[in-house]
Length: 285
Image 1 (spheres, rainbow, N blue to C red):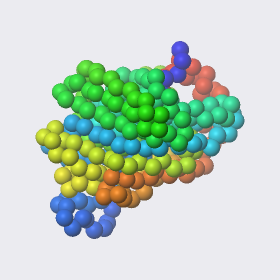
Image 2 (tube, helix red, strand yellow):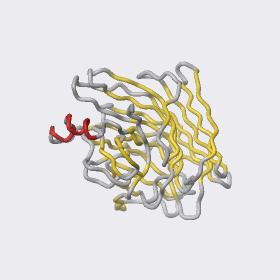
Image 3 (cartoon, rainbow, N blue to C red):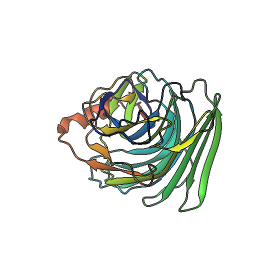
Image 4 (tube, helix red, strand yellow):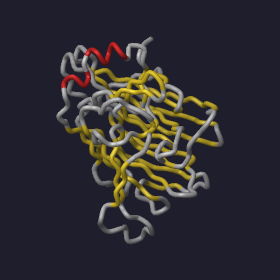
């Protein structure tokens, strides 16, 4: 069975309130941060608030690849998946990986967790500007991904058996390789340099529209740090290689960058024995 990347669930997260000033005009706007071993970016959420739509734009990065060292990274926008008890996530995005030969491979996909991700027929190359939108009404999910560089787009409407609309996210992710929803192996994070997100906007079920920094909801900055709990994937056997950190928000709270940095990882962590054990695996985001 070919490997399939799955982007998605989490078992929990470590959140810490950063001491500092809140926005003057925003009640309950204390900046929060969370660490995760598979997500980096921003999430918005608030008790009692449901999200109907999320959208954002990013530029497909170029990876620094080394022959014999495959690695993976995914960029996406989505609704759900942030709270510790979440078992659903509606998302669409692109991917930029390093294959075993040391070449960069880009692709596009969508995923409705807990189902595996689906590769979509939309050409993506490093440097392309991608714009994504996820809309959830009831259990009907509409996913749109547009390559603004080539002017080609993908659109699909689906019925989801279960949805989570309690949060909205803009994320760079280190995927996992799974043999079941509860048995996953973290994959090494590709050195993507930096990814620029912009035009990040969310809409609530009641029609309130705003950027990440909006006072209508809380926001959490998520740093990808090996050793932290994971979002959506319930169980993993090791941490990814590499870390990623989002910048402060800019552009009226709609823009930010996510930057890769390397971490020391034992070479045996991603050896051929792992490949043998997970030969029939699929990829999870």
